[in-house]
Image (tube, rainbow, N blue to C red; front, top):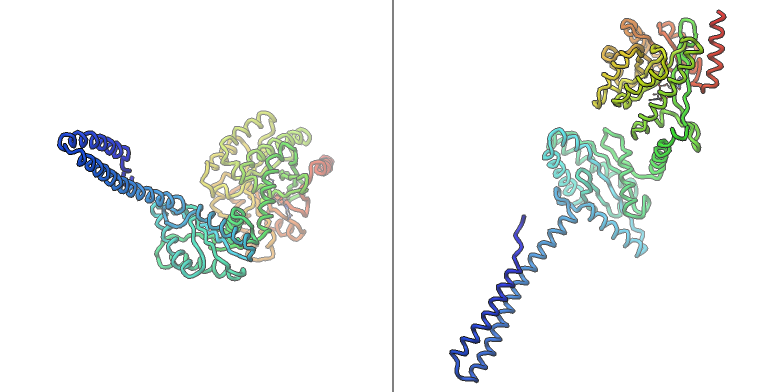
Length: 515
Ligand code: C2E
Ligand code: MG
Ligand code: MG
């Protein structure tokens, strides 16, 4: 705490007591000492004047010290309210205040006034703070603030604000056309890079700059700032970069937000449907299994690809409910096929990594198994290797439990991402699915050698190999020559709605019976 405020009440009380004592005793004393009435009257007048004089001086000093204290307090409050503690830069409130004034001036005076808002996102510093502690992170913030202020603001008509701990805003006055923004953004990036190059910081900071302009990107403070934030969020992660706001960014975001909203109610409104894509055995070209692939029939947008909405579902956590729905439908359908085709047809269901972080998943699967009593070897779960890239939960444990329960596991999309061979031994899998991206490059000799080795290695590890995305007879022949076990792709079948699939299955198994 700073200087303690003076106890004004005590001073006033002391003055009051002193005043009363002075009046009482000075009158009694004067009565004893002065006999001359005229002199007594003059003495009383002088005494009154002295009293007023002393009171005046007293009040003057009292007010002076108090006013000083009040001013100091006001300044302190102002500092706290309008400036950032850590960097001493003007803060968010100052920014809103200044921008509102600018906009108001421009609208009042009807002048074509432009300015640009540069949102500098250094969220990456949070990682540094987690590793090295708060002091290290905040020292770095101070260093960056100083660099931006000295090397950028002192040379341009711009002002730097601290927006949030690791976020800054630079407001450029009348910067002109986009080309100027780009130059400025590159200058900022260079300055931050230089800090790193000069060893002043030993941690490479990911900087994202989003730029919005008045009046093009928005005509009020909130809109301008959120436009710059949105632009920053569109910079490629892992890169220092900048993005200038345009209306399409907003529309994309709006579309995503609308989709997220609709996704929440899609299960209840029964807008999801399972399609099934047959898997073909290479040896006799017969259907040997099916993969369940979800479809979203949006009332306004039509069919939406899972490539688009599964990611959204993962971001919002809705994947847990969607995954549960898929599983329940899968079990239900599999039971019908089990009864009809006497266990000749199995089903694969995709599991998102997030579902494997759900501790309840195993219990839910056990419950479904008890309810539907399907033959366990008919159900396979498809996972991707990125289940291992996250440190949430214990996906490996869940996979092992699934195996112990008797279900099969397939590693999907092998060939994209890390495609680490070590996963083949670490994950408790039965099947390896080679991704379409490998199949698309079958003409490339090196790629062929790689696929040949993958299949060979998988077989040695007693894994079944499925090739995904086979579209041509040539691809089919090559994969058969390479000893692949099963094929999935448009060459045979696209994912089909249940009604179409039923016809195909009936035909297929009728023929099989006849043979
Ligand atoms: P995936 O599991 O690798 O499924 C294969 C995808 O490749 C499917 O796309 C399928 O339609 C497509 N495909 C199959 N053969 C061909 C071909 O010959 N050519 C081409 N161009 N594409 C082919 P789809 O149905 O759009 O699903 C995309 C991804 O969405 C799936 O990839 C899977 O990762 C995810 N997904 C689909 N359904 C579910 C689900 O129920 N749960 C979860 N968690 N993910 C799902
Ligand atoms: Mg799959
Ligand atoms: Mg796949």
